[in-house]
Image (cartoon, rainbow, N blue to C red; front, side):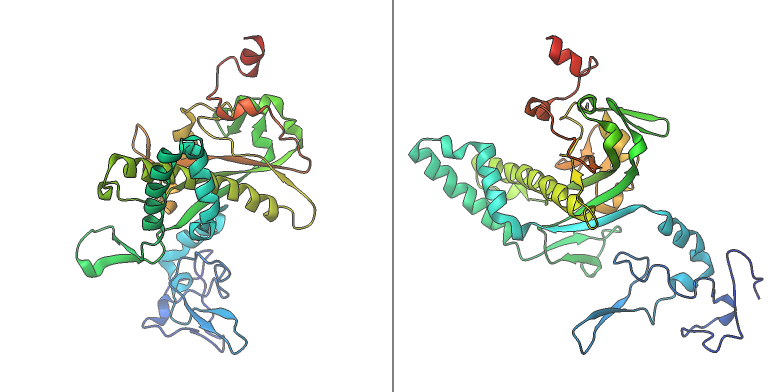
Length: 330
């Protein structure tokens, strides 16, 4: 029989002991009597859900022993220490925004009438085919038999990883995380003293089968559609974070500051990825670039006042060692 410690505790005098059906009562850990993960959608267990007579959806953890297994202590503590969240964005509800962004990227409305009609026909066909895909099958980590596949009912649902960080990490011209300093020259133009907190983010665009393209033009619109998805999601995240932080009083969220724009160099990509567990949303660094290819990583900042008004030319700035003064002088 195990001894009680900071990792394990058992109360056999409890009238409910053991509160789950188990084969080995001696290994039943009462330390987490009430599951600290119960209110989390992405907990460590595999709960079932019940719809009550009032139409409410509640978690049923009767068959889950995750927090009562002694060997799970470290994983439960590590999970509780996390300061990240995963949100899921359903792009099917944003089709009009996606099409507007797609047309803006491709300048389709600036084409002559015949060319515009041809491109519009191809673009509509490509987008409809991607967005109406009923399901896709992804092999599990073992990649073996067909019955070991994960069915994704909505391939247009994108998982976004968000991880908060303290406002003290934001400085004039750079972000600082421990011994990592990430230059972002647009921060030279911002009153960083007003920044209360920030968020790191990572996600990738919906997967598309480029090999299914019937022409070069179709492939072009497939890839451009992925770019449009990433742009629309970045805008959605900005609005989401502003609402999330404005429950009690109005807060402002910055545009997305990330590698390749707003004065942050591309060398920041692996640095930012290293600060998060991006495997949760299927994003990784292969030593040369992110995988999948259509992935994004960056930051958002939150402030009590709108201190994020910066020159529009900064949007496409890839950074310079001379900082913002380089543009001013040249």
